[in-house]
Length: 376
Image (cartoon, rainbow, N blue to C red; front, side):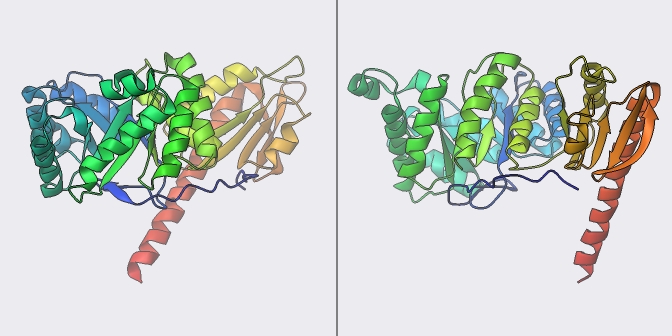
């Protein structure tokens, strides 16, 4: 039993590129990104942070490379982690070349602020020689002067014109391995810009609401903005920008994709807000379960409902369900069917055990399937 989507989102058709081994665009899954906030020169700290993000399920990590010391450390970072690294470059074209040589899978640049046309050509050559893709990153807070003079303020038209102007730098050199972002901190501005850009080109789009805020406010803004775009089929890779640790950005990104049935990873908890009818402390129970099940990567749905009003119906659509009953005894469901009862004091440990057992069964089934495919 799995939670079935009422509606399937039809994604915008975009061309396929690669960021290292991760495909972006085309029919590939929407990838989840984040960015480190450690000094890149401190390779050990940066590697440790990336590994925490890997545990959270990150697909791609961006690392700032503002100095020669940072790009020197990048080579060690790339060797020691398991996800592709995007080197974030501003202004100095040499940093981009050094990052490509150090093993970066992608260069995040604005061709217009790299310098002369010859310097842009050198960066493109380095990207091509070392198998790097490029992300053109346009931001409402750093639009080119001529566009601000033309439009008077950042608006969707200015962001899109900037993006296509930068893209033309790459296309003139017959370089097509690039994606584009047009970020803004204003949700309406960002969404409108991405909508216009999606109609104007078929390049893969990296979506995000930049400088969205702290964990709570940034999550809300990102859910509104990115959720609107994803629901419209726009977006090939995403970053949720939070004033929080990078692994939090990854977790929120995954929750967005899971909510829209675009990707599935880990335990999807469906729980009620609780009320006076609850047969157990729903809020504390969900907190404990989310913490103890955070290590699960297999896609499993779990309903935790405090009473029998909606509990049986939600359990019909989840792999494992729990509905509050009376006198401290609650019903456990398996694959939508009533299975057995459990006492309150045993409940959390018991549910954790059931989910872990299902995860192990899914892993075994996948291993057997992979082995059968390999033997063909």
